[in-house]
Amino acid sequence: MFESIGEVILLFWRTLLALPKAWQQRQKTFEQFYEIGNASLLMVCVLSFFIGAVIALQTGPVLVERSLSSAVGGVVGIAIAKELAPVMMAILIAGRIGSAMAAEIGSMRVYQEIDALRTMNINPIHYLVLPRLLAIAIALPMLVVFAILVGWFGGAVVADLNSHMDIPFGAFFADLRDIVVLKDVANGVFKSFCFALIIGAVSCHQGLTTIGGPRGIGRSVTKAVVNSIVCIVVFDYLLTRFLLK
Image (cartoon, rainbow, N blue to C red; front, side, top):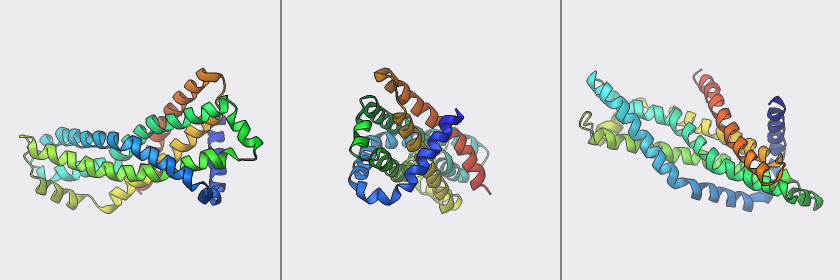
């Protein structure tokens, strides 16, 4: 385990050193960025809407019973912005995009296409890892901002339509503005940026270390998703602890 962690950190460091080459790989970065957004936007919309709806449905009636209806918008807003949107979107991207990265690079590894790149004096980190890491590091925070807005809307819809709350749209968002500040949203976006780097580094590492044919590709995909989710949960606590200071 510790060896794999060291290899992921080393891969990430080598990718950082390759950042001056980013402009040369702009076309591949844009292609990866478009694929991430195009493949994930609808799922992000559906997932975030119902996350906001569920949070409002669970917390709203309890707060209203205790004469805290003015806090419903703020509770939903903070929960989504600081925690649920970045974590859930990161897990979604790990399953959808991280697995695709591991499978694609793993296939190239198994069928010796990466060796062919080295033969042509093309650095696999520059050509394969750097564009994917840049694309996911840009795309995931943007998706999280979109998820936060949709999640707030979902919470407002439930708060307005649910008879146990009956909180109008205007009152919901007025309460949300009173409690949620820009720093709360920035914390969630910063978390998502860190999660994106974790997903990209872990998934690319699993792809580059794939061995054993098609079965090995399957194992790499599984490891990429599982390891990414574990790292997301662990780093979520560490980042939350750091950002609370």
